[in-house]
Image (cartoon, rainbow, N blue to C red; front, side, top):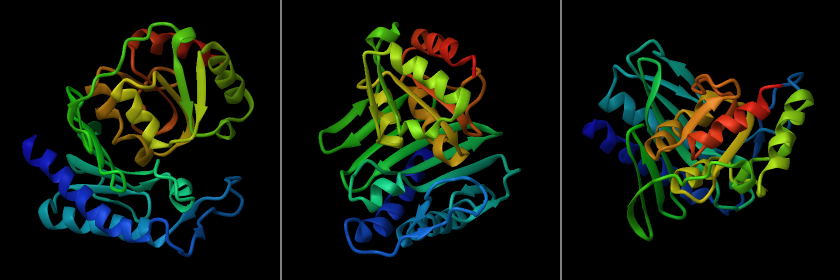
Amino acid sequence: MPELIAFLDQLADAAGKAILPHFRTPMAVEDKTEAGTGRRFDPVTVADRAAETAMRSLIGLHHPQHGILGEEFGSERTDAEHVWVLDPIDGTRAFISGVPVWGTLIGLKTNGVPSLGMMAQPFTGERYAGDTRRAWYRGPDGEKVLKSRACAELADAVLFTTTPALFEGPDQEAYRRVEASVRLARYGCDCYAYCMVAAGHVDLVVEAGLQAYDIVALIPVIEGAGGVVTNWTGGSAADGGKVVASGDPRLHEKALRLLAAA
C-alpha cells in the first residue's frame, strides 16, 4: 500500500498545520456533551474542526471514492471498500491543558478491517504508523522499526488507562483486578499510551467507552509491532467499546481472563 502509506503523511501534515497555531494559546472551548447521556465534559475546539476539515478535503480530492468516519463531522460512504477513520485530536482534554500527549489519529479500514494507521503528534514531531504486518516511527531521534516487548506475566507489566473514571460497576471491578495484578499502573496519555505499547515501553492498555475513531488507527500500529488489540471478550476492537491492547499475546490472554467477569 505504498500510495496510501504516503497519503497518511499528507493527511498528518495537513492536520498538524491546522492544529499547531492553536496549541497553548487562548481559545474558546465548547462542551459537546449531549444532555441526558450521562457523559462528562466532552470538549471540542476550533483546532479539532479545522484539522478534520483539512483531512476530509484531501481525501475528497485524492480518493473521492473512499468513505470517511470522523469524530467531528460524522460519516459518509461508509459502505466503501476503503473508509478513513479520523480523530483530529485524540486527547482534546490534554490539548486544552497544554500537555503534549494528544495526537491526530488517521486510520483506514479495508472491507471493514483496520488495515493502516498513524498517530501523528505535530508538536513533538513524532509519527507512529503501521499496516498490521510492520510498524514504524519517525521523530526527533530518527526513524525506527517499532517492536513491542516481551512480557508474559501481569506481575511484570506496566499498565496504562486514560482514567479509572472510564469504568463503572462490574467494569470497574474487572479493571481493578487487572490493576492490582501489575507492577505499575499509570493514568493519562490517551492515544500516546497505545503507541508506547508498540514502541516497547508499556505492556498493557485497558479502556472502556471508546468510539471507532479512538482505536481504528492504533490497531494496525500495535499489530504491526507484534502486539494484540481486542475487545474485553477477545473479539474485534474496530468498533470501539471496551478495549484491551497488549504488547505480548501471552499477557493479553491473562488480562482477558481477569476482565472476563465484566
